[in-house]
Length: 613
Image (cartoon, rainbow, N blue to C red):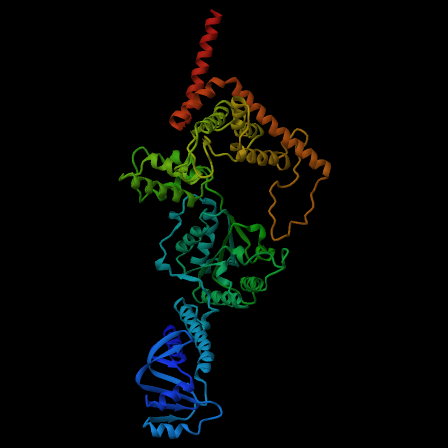
């Protein structure tokens, strides 16, 4: 196509006679003069155009200024004709050839055909690409579900750590798929839909794959977005095709990941509904409990947004079973780490129990990434085995981001950072209900200029008021240290203040932990707006109550600061020692802070004993 375009432009440029080559346009008078002088060798006549060749090259004027030494020329016969031309040609013995004038202007035809050929070329390329991806025009309505045959599935429940409740729930469905007749004889029906709900990375897809491996049945997997296409009706057709294939391979399992992409509430939000998505959802609902029973076909789905799903999906007979897949607790994290550590060489100092305790809030995917990052650190340091130091560095990278190399911090700012983090650490070490300190650092990572890491001694499921108040005081410890030592405030406490505002508002609005509004919940402090559905939702309390809530939030925040300030003021000498250690080492373990506090207590007791004596 590109070659054809270049060739057409080349020929047009040649024929235009703009000086490319040895052909030039001359006036008809100039042609008659050269003819009379006997300097014309031959001519070719086509219509009113004369193309000819001089006997000796001539220097011709081009565009009135430029000159060209040319042997070839062309000109045009005047419209009134020239009766003497034929006699002059014979007299000067000029060879004449002629052809009739063309009835078509080929250049105009080429300019019309060329765009058509270009679009045909684009269409062919698009068709070939769709064919290579298995999405030909005639296959566009075919299901994109990937089939995994039983013999190729090697994932079982042994590969899924934790999630014991989910495994128990799935065991019944697996037994039904293995022995359907045993359940049919007593009138039991196979559950049609099972919805797994949980945050990203908690193992929902892995759990579905393991269920298929345990049941030893074909496993069809697809994401919700695979149903959607630019053509109307394609999504519904793909749903029908997927269920037809699953019925042919029954007993089988269909797994739909990210169900919320097609299962959102119909007609919800500011922009109304989405016809293609709603048609796809309607077809899915019809297949789940349509006129024909889908025997021995179980539909599993996963989502992390169950709040936006259409209610018709969740009624009995469709996705009537829901499995909550939460973030793994400490015991489950230990089991997950053991599975991911099987193919990784670890040094003797690596304690998986310590790692499990130090990673609260990590999902299974996060733990896998943690060990992978640790192995990369070990490779960078040219170690053959992963050390605990590598895992600590990987955890810091995952939790706080990469070190910010080349960041220029002057001595004054560095001192402020040291006292800020020392304030957090000191309050955390002194208050009775706070979590133990793991590490204090002033090394900038990600968006943070420093950090004080605390690790809970055990998993917490309930948070009492005393723990939350101590937690608020610890967060305020950095701002309190700045106020005590430098008598100012810095922007480094921005994230701390956001955390305090968020936590204190939850205590008042949701948990009934304020002095004025005990045992009352006013709703969530963090309502998410779903496509405008919640924008018109009215508050469930009056303006005066909202003002009182704001006052209670301010009171809790103010008291947290005052507790932190008084705690630091009473132990200012320890604060200064911790800050000096941070300025010297940049990073210290929590045991260093505890050691300094214990030394102060011991000195205080010795002084009391001396005074008593």
